[in-house]
Amino acid sequence: MALLMRNIALLRIFTFTLGFVVAHSTMNGNVDDPVAALVAARTAVSDTEGKGDLRKEHDAMTKLVSAELLCGSREDVLRSSLRALDLSRALGDPRMIALDLRNVSVAFARNGQYAMAEKEARNALAMAVPLKEFDLSAELLHFLVGVLLKNDKLDEAQRVTEEALRLADGSSDERNKALGWADMARVLAAQGKNSDALTILAKSHRSLAKDGTPRDRFNIELEQARVLVAMQHAGKAGSLLDGLDEYVLTLKEPEALREVDALRYEWALQQGRTDLALERLQRIKATDDSLRMAQDGHAMAALRVLHDLERHEKDNAELRASNEQKEVTIAEQRIGNRLLMVLVASLIIAIVALVLSSIFILRIVKRVRLKNAVIRRQHDEIQAKHVELQRQNKRLTETLISEEEKEVLLREIHHRIKNNLQVVDSLLGIQMGQHGDPILERGFREAQGRVRSMAMVHETIYKATTSHQNSLHEHLNKLTRSILVTYGVHDRISVQVDIAPIDLPEDQLLPLTLLVNELLTNSVKYAFEGRESGHVHVVLRPAGERFELIFSDDGIGKETEAVVGRGHGISFGTELISILAKQLNGELRELRGSGTAISMVFGPLPQPLRIAS
Image 1: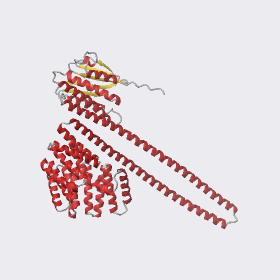
Image 2: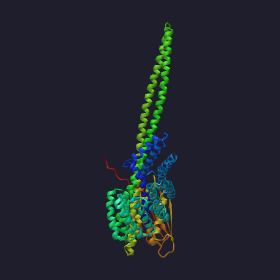
Image 3: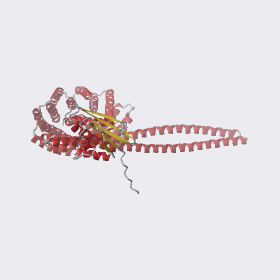
Image 4: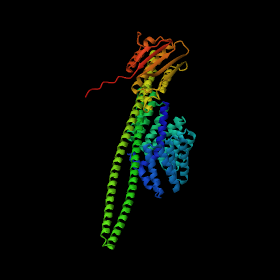
């Protein structure tokens, strides 16, 4: 819950810092298609660079910053913002410099450099104050308060808010006053003064109900609900949250939906409504996934469009260079031909009587024409081959992009399965805490171990690129450590994992992981009763065309008969071991020695029969 609330706070600050820049982008053009806006901005920057009109170049660069923010380009946003700041400084416009400093602060916050974001926000305010423009100063003070709250500088945020309120008292703009009161309420809430914050929020709400935008009213009611939840006023908070659901339908903003769901989640946990809390948690995860996929889609589409533009520009440049070279060659040929014709005409006029000389000259002209025809034919063949090569390159590029998208989708599927298994793990933990029966608690804990083992498999597949050869040892090490910590025996039982450098297919990794989980859980529960310490050894190595798993411990060894399937009263875990061994096409057998020692030779899996067509 603490991690969720921290993510909510980061989302609020990030939405606040980007609000001004996104507002400028909506006023300057259509943002329904971020990729189209990015392409248009890039084209405008290219058209204005090097033309000597710094103001037009600055306007194009500002639009590029807004488009890159919408497409999620972090490094590009910072680079473009700094370039726009250089242009405004070259123009010497203080107001333009202040706005560009604010954009640089937003870019630093976007990249997680909040100290630099605070520094540039202060510089922007210092540049705007001498201009004596109330709206600009109020906007930058409001922006600086958000950055200070992010850096936990509450006293400084309170001082800046008081300065903003003093500035607003000298103006007739009621909306800016109400926003200043809202900032003061946020500072008081961050300081734990919830009652004072609630009083100021009510005053701000009355003013914004008349002069504010729907987003202003949503923000103030959301802050009221957050303070009421913190004060555990369940009834009033619930009523405000119901009203906020109607605002979400009107605003149609995923960020607004996520903020309301997060607050509803905290409220449900206070009321003991675990079902409602789980529903809101799933909605939050779905919203995060949608936002991330939309941002990734915009970034991928933008990269693809920019790649096409760069390739198109490169092809045009090469074509222009080729045409220029051809024009030079043709001009040279024309000049040569003209000189030759003049010479021939002069010779014909000068030496009319010399027939042989005339015939010789005519032959020379014929040869030149034949050479020109050969040159033109070769040029046409080269041009045709060049066009075919461009088509092949285009098809190859499209094929590579398609394969990359498939790989991204497959990795995303494993990531989501791992996340869903973690949700199941959390549900089992919640359910386990509601019973006092030790038997049920042990069953839930064993189920959690199996779910975590499956989640680790999908996490390993998600992080790997082509095979699990390099990550299998780390995967089993992590699995054994998790089991020892779960049962609280990591300080008295040691596990040694020896894995040969083998390439284990994905369809064998999951049953093998569950099998090791059951064997180690069985040893932890029964093999070391009444002992201060113990040791477990896990070995995985090639055995011809198959693989061999050896599991041994130095315990009392009373569960050996049940594990290999010859005992009576077989438990669920023992039956699961037998099922998993069959899935791996493996054979279990007991090894002699002290404690428990089991060997299983498994793989390869039988190939399914193909249906004749």
